Amino acid sequence: MVDTEAEPEATVRYDVADGIATITLNRPERLNAFAGDMHSRYLAALRRGDTDPEVRVVVVTGAGRAFCAGADFTRLETLEIAEVRRNAVAEPRDVAFRMGKPVIAAVNGAVAGMGLAHALMADVRFTVPVAKWTTAFAKVGLVAELGTAWLLTNLVGTGRALDLLLSARPISGADAYGYGLAQFLSEPETLVSDVRAYARTLAGNDPDALREIREQVRLDASRPFADAMADGYERVFTALERGRFRGARTRVRGT
Image: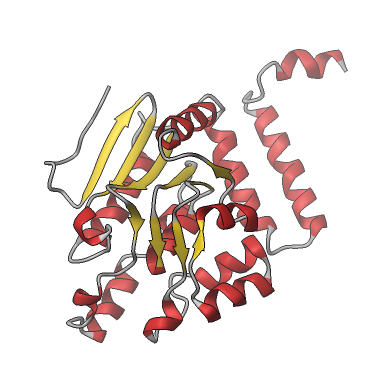
């Protein structure tokens, strides 16, 4: 089944096939930079994927030659600070980080600023070698927004995070893979098929297990090992009690 949300000119597209929702940032003439209601549409598409019973995995990518160049600077020049504050409170931006289903970012080209932040909020990232990755913030007088400093530090360590943020230097997709920002390196002609094959692997796993594992990883990053162990045991016991473990009863009786 394919469920396409909107007309071809929509700035964010939502398609479902084989249990995989593909969200495409679709403003290629501006390297998919966020402008107008595009950011809200993107967050709404993520929430839709998280609640859609047909969806097991969400893939995020960009149209054309970019993933997302961040915020459109022509729009930033006309923004009211009060409006920005209201929007930030009314609509949390970390949807991908908090949702219950796995999110895969397919970085098909340039990714910068808040576009980079959204890619880093995904669970797993694919990139092509020639993609240009950059934080960009320091070059335009901004700071690391949308939790980018936290995300980078947790992915690549303090030193590398400071390098990428302070220098705002661009790195290639190959370097991003080498640094650990991306987990998979694909050629442009195979990126889509590689991502979908991986997404199908995740979609074949137990959705409750996927949701809880994502939650564990987030929580365990900031708590002592003993607490992580205790929480893990409780989750295992709950899974067994609810009969979620495949073959659980047979194995338990045989012990």
